[in-house]
Image (spheres, rainbow over the protein chains, first blue to last red):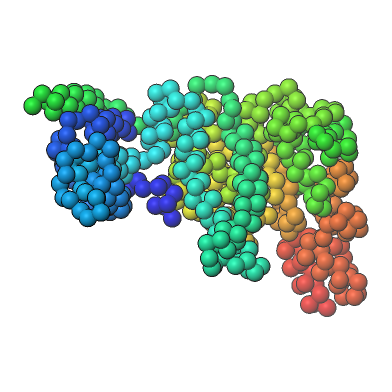
Length: 258
Length: 283
């Protein structure tokens, strides 16, 4: 279950993995912000393909593009709806019967959004793939995030799989007492309501016990906290952070000047 | 010198009329191993929670009398202060892992992070603890992937790492399988040898018989009796009156005495039973 525990971090030995989580975050945020500011989709597509050297360095070239298949369904709807019903339509591209038409503006708009989604997806995903949540939280805490918030973030990631498995246990238990979980949608919804009670009560009970465990570890001690995970912000991090910001600005400006 | 001292201590949870602990008078010496036994609902878990200050600081209620732990009055100290003196272990191996660490090592270090211990010192102590509980090959695994017994050992180590002088264990093996149980008791035995004061609430009389110095019986929210372990655990009448089943070895010797096959005192441990059986067989 280690994969589920840490959502989707993939451990690899690469320069990109070793970068400070904040550096990678800055890179992702730069790319995502850019995707909204660039003049047209051509620039976004270039930005999209610019992930390749990073992903290759991180040895995750194939994984980074994997979630794109989920985008496919969104694209179908996006193109379907926008090319027919875009509000600022002017130019007819293809005239269809019954007064329907495919509009050029709508089509371009859909292309625009799709290119943006592609950029957001790959840069966001590369960040998630290469950054250990523990490192990210440790670094954020070091930069002033409250201690308790750091705990909340990291535990949430860890406890989601716990709640899932707890739900499964309850479902099995109810099923063995004759609960029907198959059939029509309404039947299924009905079947799942009795799960909520035990699941909710169980979670509250667990929360109380966990709170006691936290107390036993001096969680509320009033002193400067230290950290076990060592995350360094090196010269390379400085260089990459600075150049991502500067290059983003240049690229954004160039897209509007050309 | 007494490291834990209850003086006429009573505790009533908010919303309850009757006290859950009534007039407890008890002192525990440094380095002592005290077993706590009693039937379900006798107030044993509450008793364990007092020493870390969960009572009265975490649960609301009324306190009477006094409790001093390692020189600190529990009522006047914070839980954080007490947590460097008292380590408390609960039943459930799963929920007492805080989830703050993505690996065993980080889970162990969490208490030290909270106390602001420098990183170098942290590394040193974590290494020592991992070795102590024998989980070297698991140190970079998620604690949630471990077996119940291993999780419980991690929980014990994550409290021990804060170097408390007193370790309070509230039924640490109640949810474990036999293998996990024996793993945890092996660790407790190791710790007892190191001279940490241990207060262990358990139903596992067989294990308790082997290493407790003294045993306290709680019943109906009162401390019924405290005495040498052997004296209490072989007092069959006293045990039964308080709803506790004696150790299997004691039961065996009782049966043999009743049937006239054996003349001697009641057995308590495996060692006793061996001697007894040798005698019976010789006859």
